[in-house]
Amino acid sequence: MTEGAVQVRPARDEDRLPMADVFAAVAEERDGIATEPPVDVEARAASWTLDGTFVALVGTELLGSVHVRVSRHGFGEIGMAVSREWRGRGVGSALMVAITPPSQVSAGATFVHGG
Figure: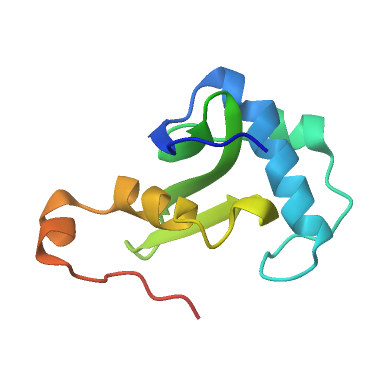
């Protein structure tokens, strides 16, 4: 595990396989994700929608990703996966800041409801 500052940026094509690897690892935990293992990593990587996706990295190590898409009802649907060893260290929070409208971040508002 690499140490350093967590950086968040929009996902790029070269992030597809590392994102799919993290996704597959989270699915293996069988808790908190709506996908059952085994995950076809190559197929998942190829089908990943990059528009609306952000990744968190330390150096070149991809720690997790978040994706937002507009549902058919006009609400934002959020999917996130963070490597187990990086949970509880602010990675998910950093990813959420990347997808939160700046006016909501500065106001300290919480607009995501999981459940």
